[in-house]
Length: 216
Ligand code: SIN
Ligand code: FE2
Image (cartoon, rainbow, N blue to C red; front, top):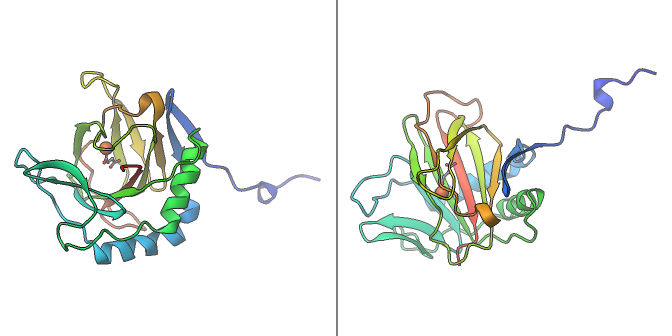
């Protein structure tokens, strides 16, 4: 009997290796979307996106929010993690269970067992918004990986090396893709090129990225 397409199990998400301990898990978040989207809506109701000031006096083009025990924040005094939302004075919304589980499973798929995030940064890019090359180094220790989930419009991610001068790789990140980096790659420079105009069928004219970390 001839086997048909419909006998095949669902295609497992594809894992691309971009370094010793850096991976893109293509489409990894897609099966979770029905739980992720309402959870994000709840978080954003309590802690809306806002554009923050950098210590250098610039307004970021990316709007951000947070959930979890610690939230990444910036103002004239510097970059840091805070437990209360500076906009509302209330604690950041709790980290939704679906994001905690997704982060743990994505980390495991990239070789990092037992990842327990306590911070989730939400980034909103509209066309033209970008993030310049930086390292994630406001966390207390670098033992845990970074898990970064992309939703909406495709972005061109820049994945650099451990030195700012290392020429970055360009990695297109699509709706549902999850990047994981840690271990020897934990302090790699990274950024996002200006978002191109477009309208995503599910997310509209924007890209939303959320980045799960262990900060405390
Ligand atoms: C970040 O480094 O905080 C954001 C990365 C991204 O938007 O993919
Ligand atoms: Fe980052």
